[in-house]
Length: 431
Length: 126
Image: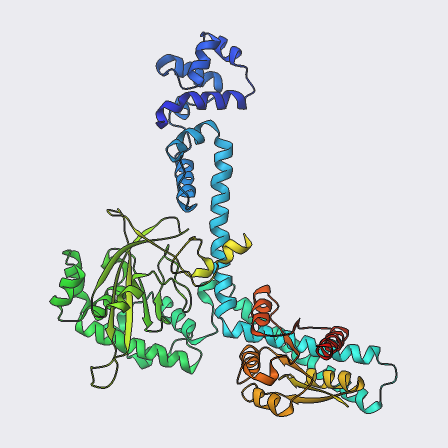
């Protein structure tokens, strides 16, 4: 039912909210109760003076009765239906539902927002507990020390006649362990404090590199202009705390400089403005597609004209580099969704793959993914090439074709009966 | 004949405590802290029971138990696994790999002693 035909439902809702009897309202506006009943059930159109009179009697603007305040609410209901992953037969009646039961509709939309927020939290925590070696090691250290203290203390407390030598030894152990527990607990708390905002978290080299690139918005103008060297940038980066992170960042910046020299900013900005597509851009700049895609991902948003995400993997699927983009969840480490075009590209190296995708449970945002796998090493006889694969992720404003449904990683993906599933989803198990 | 346990654990003070507890119960305790050669140590010792930590340097307790169960004469050896990871998923994986009993840290001495007695009694009945 069209929204404008729901005026009657809104009148009824407002009247009931005011605890006004149908007959009383009908009397106030000089119509019969039975006619008002037909209006309230959307069986008679209403407008003109009668609408103005009813609105006045109900204490609202006439537009509130004709337009309603539920545009955002209806959009939220449609989003909830889409994210449920189930066919909703009454999807066309979202307007009617919001009009007749605005309170319930608000509850449903609110719960959907809450579920989405919880899913994001679960995804972050699950990702960390499963893949974060520092966190796992810290917790193991704390629990092992606690186990030693508990066991030792219990021996001291419960063993009646304990030889002096054993007693001294256990006291010494308790002293050592309690000190260790204090230190490891402090270190754990400091680590968790540091990671209270996901984007600022440190701990493993890849995360330090990501924090470094994020701090520069993935674009290094001073490097492109030759004002600084990769080494200088790395040396002055507070985000890069470990040698491993500095070495990884240096390699990425050297690659960045090479890309920028081959594809200068001013020239690619002009070409992008003229609407030249990626394949033609590669020809124009005599670069290969991996270099071109990397370069596009490194362009500032105002130059590219839109946001972009990038993920680069080795042939085992382990993520080497990631530039996140809002609405498309990239797991922090490996174990991404095998349905991503990133991996389809690995099956056909050197063949560009373009897919329109949408992630399950991610508010149905649609992205265009451009992927390609390429040999990292020159061809050699008697030696298999080592491949890498990358995927540029661009938001799509208007969808034209059916999108490929993908996940983020199996643990937090709700897709049922997925042929690519590696392990059950914790969302299925625990929610 | 004395009872013999091999304890694979990298936390020295846990080793000390368990050694004390089990020695008083008449067990001979051989402790080893490195996972990489743990299977060889167990094979050589041919103990009545193994207490195995999950997170070890060199090789994880999960890998060790899988290798142990592949040895014909170690298939029925009672193995008590100690771990800081107590999720149902970890327990399930450990049991599937062949662990006889699973205990999460921090454990109580009473629990450890009860588990050791149970496992040993069961093994002797079979």
